[in-house]
Length: 166
View (tube, helix red, strand yellow):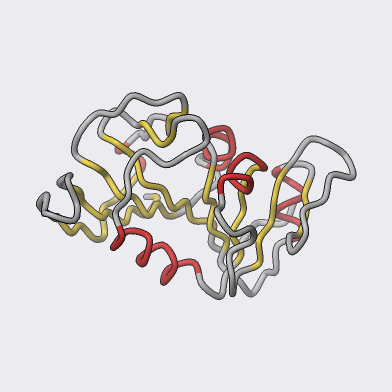
């Protein structure tokens, strides 16, 4: 497998690592969705098929959408398909950054390979059926942190963190 470029994980997690329930996000933070779009536009996004199915309008515009599935010959219109983590990395354009966007099993498999984490941490616990794997913060350096208080439009306090692997 070629050593890949920049593999980043982008995820919004609750303080108990919750990321989803019933294949849906647990909260709506408009600013976070805009940040996600700004960071990932023009790059490759890699996701599992449940994450793809959770997208409201199909493939995300202005990005290469790559879906990993273990069902051979499964296809989703407007997406590149991969049948393993290794194949996704082989197929990815070496000139584009790779952003891993979910779900739980995809995050777990890519976490050891990632060299950057874009975290939105929502400062409360949520009931969920999908969780982000535990992060060993000793392996990471925080290069950026922005904190936001709860507001009328956003009912939760949250922080943006960018971590790089040491």
